[in-house]
Length: 336
Image (cartoon, rainbow, N blue to C red; front, side, top):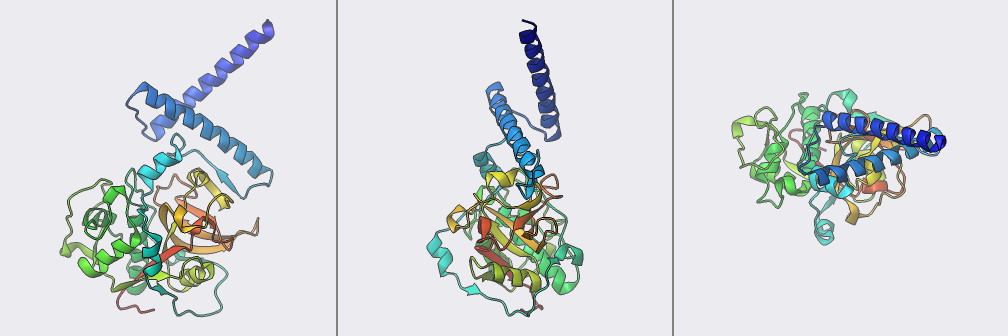
């Protein structure tokens, strides 16, 4: 009888601790739910995800995993919910993609063993797309910011909102998704430039197009799509050209990433599983594990991963399809 009373006390105390953590979590990430049933559903997702994080991190401590997980703004959300609100790759028919002319850049050898364009001052601080499916815009903007800074020596934060609001005629869907090709088409052929973040600030919602020629911060003359599925070409491009827009599969494990080299065998290399666009800003090799990695800038704020970045497995059978849909803009007067 005493044992049962003690067990009830322990369980009650455990639930109280979890409830306190839940209240702190909601406050930290400004979580609000419309109904009690909705909160219960998210609370259960939070508990299940947290338990998986603890199990995974124990495997990491035992040397069985190369990355560790952490609690973030997505811990109470299902993968489908995150895809609907915080990714945004709109997709395209594979036949459309295969019809695009692929570009293999003119490159020099040998390549450096490690590259990090953040150290060269051509990568803006990590941004946050919020609850808008605009990853494609952040990916393209990051590539253009890098090429503009490399060509002019001036790092300018450019406007994702400009692309969210103004590329529907090119085939994108604002906060409901899009893809880089249509964004480049708009920048190169329609607007012939892109506004600055200051002139056209990010709101994270669909608005009427408010592009202004007087606020243009960078221009592009063309864009290149890299040979798909070839990590060597992507490495050469990152090394010699700069930050490259890439689209990937962001798996359930990706959502909880907190540090280390992300090596997820369930993350598909196939085109059909791509759901998120990000920015490859460098590469290297982890000294502890010996694993090659890509340095990838995400658009989920600095709470995610390593201050907003994730190191993704490199030279690992195109894991997460990282080299399948890679591209960058040409910026005058720099010619590649």
